[in-house]
Length: 64
Image (tube, rainbow, N blue to C red; front, top):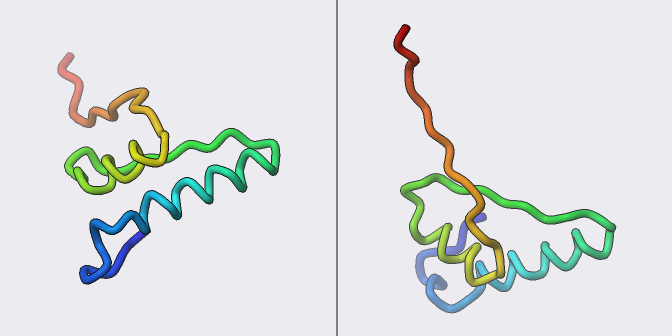
């Protein structure tokens, strides 16, 4: 999702996420979302919409 720069910090993103969650529940699905670990704005938007952090993705090489 993306909100125009001039409309940020007005709650549009979290409103959109809340509405999408409602559609998921109405369809009998369980909503889930993810964002980049450095996407602080995206993470906060999802948290305001009621999503919880349940894990983190780590990427790297294994050493044998």
